[in-house]
Image (cartoon, rainbow over all chains, first blue to last red; front, side, top):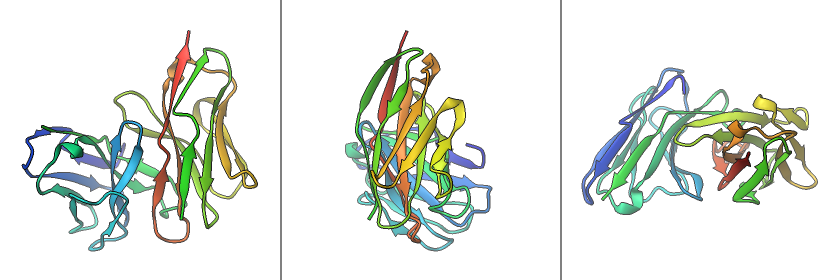
Length: 114
Length: 114
């Protein structure tokens, strides 16, 4: 997980509360990704950012917003949390050219929505 | 569009016997393919990757995978299972056409019996 940090590591929210998950990288890479992991479903892409200032929807973007204000940071926001958003969230960056190279993953944020 | 199917959600083997985890993919372009491992409550670690070089790819911890274009498969094998191999394994296909997306399989949980 070197080079990709996520905060917080754990979070418990009540339905309707909001929060922002933070991801930061020190590898100076253009692309950054947010995934959620649920049992039996693998990792599903929520949003990705190909470069600073650009973001695109992935497979499951509903209920989330993202912000890529600078090259280093990519945040994921839940405006009104729902129990269906209980999951483990991973941030990732590709090792080199996206697509051709593997991704580095952050340590994850375990989120529970009550 | 890319997709990936892991054919078994659970696989059990005895320690010392071979491991076979199956993965089929679909891709409109020449794909890059990856296998990751995730031990319980841990992050994702790259086992190996295929990026259009040798079709037989060797990875860490004695794992290898063979890219078979005619069968659209990328199965993961290991000659002799160890107790420490018990984990969840994910097959991933990436889009090399420029959309930057990585598609994860739903995972195979490997159980190693003593």
